[in-house]
Image (cartoon, rainbow, N blue to C red; front, side):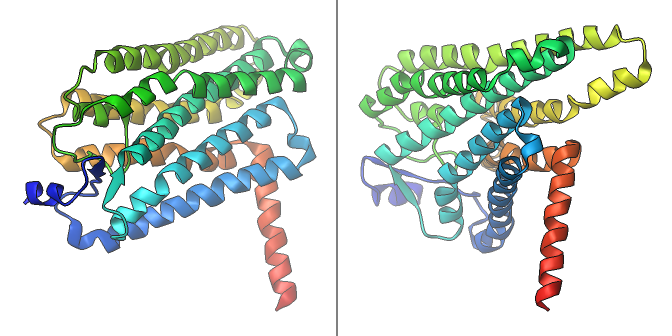
Length: 320
């Protein structure tokens, strides 16, 4: 059956995988996914709107949060058409060119999110360990330079390994593991020499995701060392509370990546549903949770959001 299905697709196209065995329930499954995407777009747009309109939030910490929200928005935009397209029966296949482009954006945005989280860790380190020089170190010009560096690091290092995908010979079954394209999924179907992709891809992961994780850990060890030296318990708790949102965002980002990596490496015997589920958690969980985390845990944003909703309620009552 699968061979017959594959024969209907062109040689340069790939079959997208939704939830194997649950095809009759796709319409129902699409409801929570559609809800999640709406929450991703509305939540991150709300964070951007609050930061833009609230003058008191025009600070380095919130500029980095705006970068995180933009990254999450782009991640949602890069996958929504294939994920919902498969569930709604609108999309069954994706061309090689589109697949390569999508994998570039997914992996590039993952590296960008990791870099932004590292920048936010640096912001917390300066704010707690060197508060008197905070405003002189993290000036607007420095933040712009950091933003440009993040963009260049995330977009310019990936093309060699992504472009190489267009020159591989794909002789195995053209069935993707997810309803979107990942680099590791494409090289799994290749019969050409993939040593460059494997080695360069591993180097990218080490020099981006792993290095960022190590640097974030080091920054928090230094923060903890500084906080423990504070005599007042109340001041210690106040300092640590400013880091809670960022720590949650780091965990929300890295745990799905670790889970997806483990499934791809060691989970060949697992059900395809596990692969699909972990893949969707990887692309949707951070963009969904980050606005919620920062809206709940960050006092300035929480107050501004509450005022925004109360204003909308007053306006709606006035219209009635």
